Each structure stands twice: as structure tokens, then as C-alpha cells.
Length: 112
Image 1: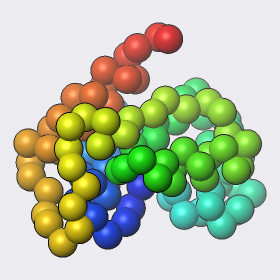
Image 2 (image 1 turned 30 degrees about the vertical axis):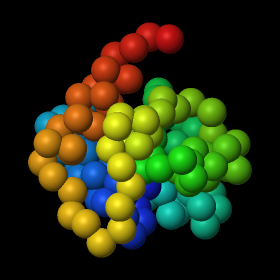
Image 3 (image 1 turned 180 degrees about the vertical axis):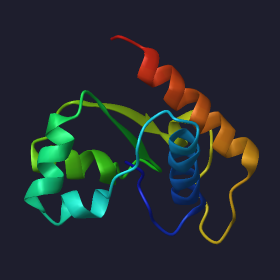
Image 4 (image 1 turned 120 degrees about the horizontal axis):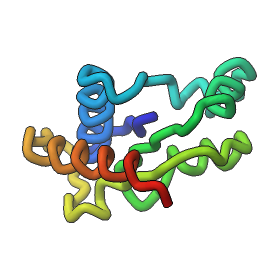
């Protein structure tokens, strides 16, 4: 689940999630559907072995959506925790996306 917003870190979150999906590392689902309280979508997330959340910034929007829906089976990556600054009106770089993809893969393989 990728956070989507107006800043570069949102674009990074989305592109990283898509890269993971396209490389066979999982499937993307709709975070907005969870936020809207769509029961079937919430149940799908609860039934998953693990969900990966990629949040853009310290607002923790994706994490808050999961917590509000009572979904606890997730691993978490925050783009700004990786040294990437949140800037509105700036496009992300491939290098930034690669940093997040690498961290996501590490997070998914970490058994903690």
C-alpha cells in the first residue's frame, strides 16, 4: 500500500510500490478504499500474510489508515526516514525510488 499525495515523497512511494509489484514482489491494493471503510478491502488486508506500507513523510497517513481500520499485519517503510526530503512541486528521481525499493525488500525479508 503506497501513500499518494502531492509531494515528491508520494510519487516515490507510488513508484516504489509499482516497481515491487512489477518485479513480482507483491500486489498493489487501494489505500483509499481502506480509508473509505470498504469492508471487503479491509478484510483482504486483514487476511493477507503481510502488508507493506510505504508512507511518504512523518504524517504517517498510510499507517494511520491501517490503524483506524484495525489492521495490524503490516511492515512499514517511511520515505523521509531514508534521508529523502519532502518537497512539493519536484519530481522524484529513479535513484530515490531505488533506495525505497531496496529498503522495502529488506523490510519484507526481515523476520522481526
